[in-house]
Image (cartoon, rainbow, N blue to C red; front, side, top):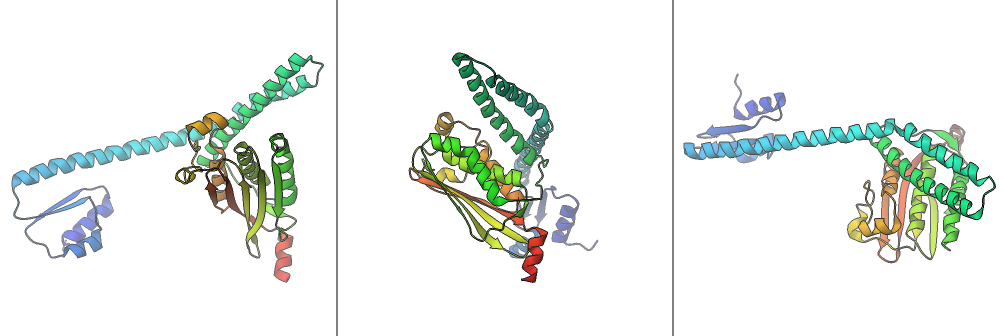
Amino acid sequence: MGWDGLETIERMWEADPEIQTVICTAYTDHSWDDIIRRLGCDDRLLILQKPFSSVEVSQLAASLTTKWKLARQARQRLEAAEAANVAKSQFLANVSHEIRTPMNGILGMSELLLGTPLNDKQRRYIETLHKSGNALLQVINDILDISRIESGKLKIERITFDLRQLVKDVLELLSGPIESKGLRLTVVLADNLLPEYDGDPVRIRQILTNLIGNAIKFTTQGEIALHVAVAEDTVDTTTLCLKVRDTGIGIEPAVQTKLFTPFTQADGSTTRKYGGTGLGLAIVKQLAQMMDGTVGVESILGQGSTFWCTIQLQKPSTQTVLAKVV
């Protein structure tokens, strides 16, 4: 064939990257630097130069065989676990309608009951039922959303919407919890925001609701501030930065990087005290990435936190034409 040892290995690895290779030789035409340059520092390759004993080779071969078998088994277990995780996510995404429908029915009937004549005791029971149902529905929605994202079934829509009205709607939705805890709320919207953008208002509303809701949960006094600014602007797109600052409990540096991982909160005591699935920030991260954005957090323990994310939105066609003309 005319191949030397290195080319032979290269050809074998092209055919099967998992082939483990041992070369026994009395000399080599290539320096170690040349071998590293061409083949890399790879544990699939072992070079033995004479003199060596048959016992040494036999023991080495046995050890390497065991190592390679264990490595292959580990890869197979990882592949099986990943396949099982995908199957789980696909299953949850597929049954989302079946899970949500009966829960919405329970909430709907409890609302109807609250509109009927009830004594104080009955009303208290129904209000508790309705409140608990809403809390359970939020948990269900979070689990199903992260499953749909992981299985690739959640798609970002593109429709024209009013960003200022969207922010107003979110704040109205959360005004009750903010007022009940006696917190101050400040909102700063950049002056250079367009009247309308093209994007997915449902998912942007979900991002804002999660970020502000998280701030409310972990803040007992002080204020919550929302800032919406233009991070980058082009002829066709605008990248927004959504930033929520609170004066809550803060987060230790060691756990900040874990907060955007599904089912993760600061620690077990946080989960017991404040509740939640630990999915809100993971959903924010995934949605931001689906809108060509990113997420981040800055926090000092005991002094509060600032969570932010960027999202890229399209300018409506009329705005784009106008920008090009100008």
